[in-house]
Image (tube, rainbow, N blue to C red; front, side, top):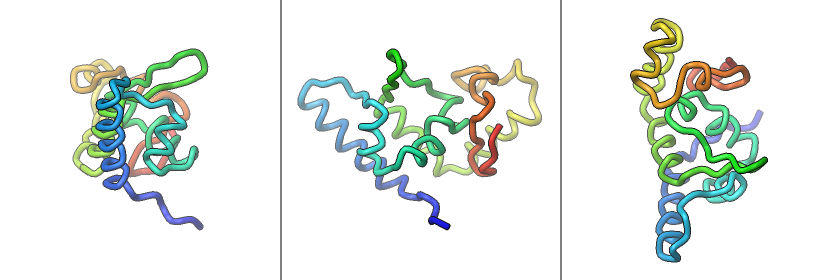
Length: 130
């Protein structure tokens, strides 16, 4: 069995370096999905689990979708990886998922309950699929 990907701090550092590089060049600070994977040092399957289908990411952020391609803001990815390091964030999300009414979810998080916990998304900590 392969070891779990656990290089959040390294990925944050790489993203911040990329943001600085793009800012100096006057480029937008968003990355297409495959560029984000490369900068963060993730395979496609790890990116799916850690970002795209992760309920904690989906609670706060939505990628910019352009046709069949998605772009992710570097700031959003940095904030998300920081939240993944904070177990309180994950526990609060689980509490909201199981114990509070769906109508109260939007008061705490940026996106609604149905988007955050859509079928096929993954809940951090439990490793389960919603």
